[in-house]
Amino acid sequence: MDRARYSALAHASCPFAAPVHPDAFARLVERLALREGARVLDLGCGKAELGARIAARWGAHCVGIDRSPYALEIARRRAAGLTRGSLRVLDADLSGPLPEGPWDLVLNIGAMPPGSQASAMLGWRSSLAAGGRLLIGDGYWKRAPEEGYLAALGGTSGELRDLVGTRAYAGELGMETLAVELSADADFEAYETSYRDNIERWVAANPSDPDAPEMAARARSWWGVYDRWGRDTLGFVVLLLG
Image (cartoon, rainbow, N blue to C red; front, side, top):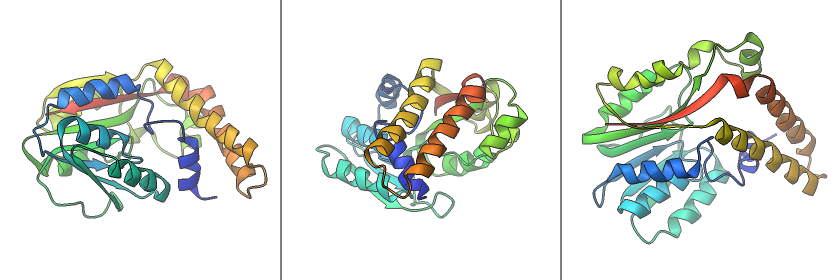
């Protein structure tokens, strides 16, 4: 099964591949107050919905990076439709060399490197122009994760912090927290429900696709993990740092 294709189908109805309410992103975009022509780097841009909104609102020039050909195809169509600002998307790995700065804004929503967020953000911080900002969205532990949950995720407890620890990144980077958007339980529930239902609808419409059985099984398994552990254990927060 092509995992990038699976993710694209699972997020088909989601403007953002993260459990964040669109109103929260709208508030954050307004808080940016970027100058005309500001340079923006969107790491793990996906369909580039957020990058496109920033470009259109502030006349910014945004470069998005992702590896999913399905998401990038949508992002390129979105870029072609902009009437203010610009959006260019690149098929590139976030672990490789990044486009040269300086940047007025670097954002990463839900594509943080697990367990090495601090070192990654230090690198992004060094690429900022004077007065530049970071917009970071990442998960955090609402409570200590159980071993069964970690096994299902294929991760370790050290890959995320709790909310206090996550907010402490600002001080570690020598930056201030300018805005915080904390995802509500309802935002997470809506996101996970859409993720599952998008696959279920696609499988029902494409029963003869060779990947359909595996996709259905994966979506149901993930929902089971969320229902048993994720709902009470994992949160999501977006931080604007400057």
